[in-house]
Image (cartoon, rainbow, N blue to C red):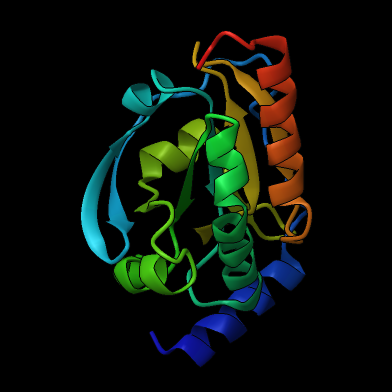
Length: 186
């Protein structure tokens, strides 16, 4: 799919979509997953359970690589990676849209600083992040929802909003707040 066509499709779907609303609430157990994707252009396999052993994980879903809001959000996460790392957190992005371009996207917009994965139907369903049209029918892309998951597998923060602004700052604040309450967990 050509990037301009994809951008127009995403914009049209987003205009007709219901506001993003994640059904997984704070305190819920996060579904564990293993996903395929890329970091710095190289293929990887990411296992959530393994990453949670290291500390909190920010799992952020975005509609599609190489679209305006998603490019800006990935760049903002990349710029904030030193802060997430200092707080002991891992960041991973997932999308159902444009997955054939994730290797390139991981290098260009993620700056090789965190992995991006193809969100499988099981992951999308488990996290309830399928973007829906105003009439309630599904689209083939994920909405924009960010979760912060504590090492015990519980969701400690959810930010679900199609506007990319605010996802990085709010998830970083949630990680820092968790770290303040759990200073010995490094």
